[in-house]
Image 1: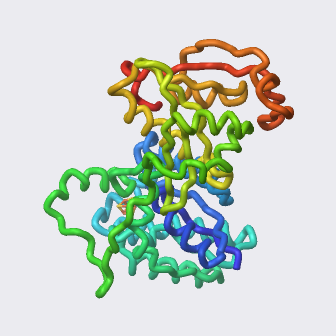
Image 2 (image 1 turned 135 degrees about the vertical axis):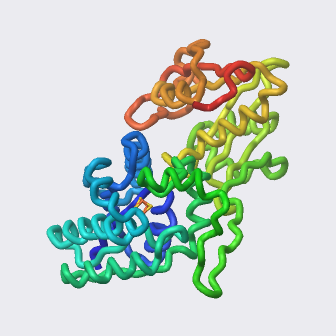
Length: 350
Ligand code: SF4
């Protein structure tokens, strides 16, 4: 099966992609949403999806069309039925057209994840279009994972929109305080979502994390020294440790982030950033400054997290302290650069 998945936004795509991948179906994400207004909202949702699809390595196609004027002209005569008469058909028709022209045999849509959409209506429109284009429509009741997907999107820090998309839905958001919750099919209920990401201080058996810590600091001797006096924090995702860090006290005002490392297959998803934010919140009451020593390659990352004050350079640090040459990507590590973050004045991770 070659599947093209019309995708309305990153948060809705989370559960759909995860559950399809569990079935060993690899979708191609297809962005075509001229129904999202105003432009800043359109751009934010599109760019969030771009970043998210890149981070999870899923193929994504972005069909650009922003059209407030065209959209309004087409729905203004019958606002009540705009979703069924115009908004679902134009998006799914364009998806099917692209699928047909580009060798996909099946299409689906992330609209099927939302209990706020007309689920049966979407299926009706999609089946009709599938017939016209001689394609298969892949139906899944993704609504079962709606809350799980939203919770994961929130944990990942994805932009979460407050309304469906068009300016009329934006208005309804303010007028709908008394509206009932969406109607769900019989015997269908939201399952409680377990907190996916947790961070805690590990007091015992810190040595179990040495293999992971060695990925950021190749000297086992050095790690043992600071591990024995430092505090170790572990971030778990669905109970699996994915990021660890060690912090040591320098004096009554200053602490040092000695090591922070994320498991290879979880990198680039914001876990280290979350860990730093947690550490800052944890230490800001007691300390004024957090130091970090880093290789040249990682300076931009730390500066982005607020370690924007240059402190010092220790010349030949990596040559003097390691038995073998240390590499960070293509870089031969020689000097250690120290930067600091002000915990009192600047406790927000940007
Ligand atoms: S409410 Fe949502 S689905 Fe309906 S027309 Fe507006 S953007 Fe489209």
